[in-house]
Image (cartoon, rainbow, N blue to C red; front, side):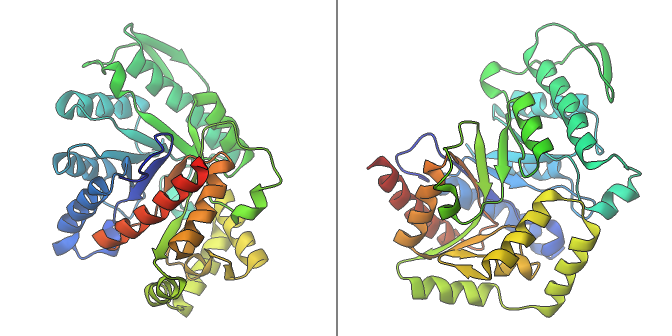
Length: 339
């Protein structure tokens, strides 16, 4: 299991994206990654949503049908559907599969996606909208009485959720915590604020985070540092086309987390100990990586845990074996934190 002896820590994997896989093999890869993730003891698996991908809810149903315990972490964007529809999907999955769903509450997205959908809402206002959106979802899934709500963005009148959701299946809530608006929204709705971490040493001089907090990070760990870096360099070679795509995304995006990651890459260089930004700079993934032997990666993870981060969202696992190596690093980290 990941992790072996710390029930407070939740590990999420990430589901492959349809745009990155051939249509003929995507369905089986989706099922394979879900089963690997469940076998490795992951709590849930993130399912992305944007204009270029297949529907996240249909992908989540495939995950539920092909696993026994793994929970989908469904990315939910207010522009795509009404909060009633989200609550209905959660209650339906609970009714059909007796499985909990996690919701990754997305305030924005790629700028061109939002323009195509005629969503011109400013960055901070999108989080205010998301608070209303999530409040309605929470009320519908927890209240035995009809729900009435009147806000700036949403209004419902005597709306009832049928079938009702069993209390033990109430969804876990996650939201980006990279901006002040995101952190405020997380507190308002009781969600875990997920950030893209700095090198762990930068948290040592600050008080531990007392709110629910998580990080998005890739991990490549092996018995020796040399093995880990050999795998990392082979998996993420330099890509000039990717670098240009990254630069273009920076010019077009109003995403706080994207700018923060780019600033960290410039400030820290490609490598700071086990902390590696190269895959992000080459537009090959959207998170920092930790690369090293089990003890080195575990030391970095244990520092994040001591800083108050207990939810870890991993990158897409390329193989079943990769998750076994991740498990080994978390096993070491759990033992280090327990000392």
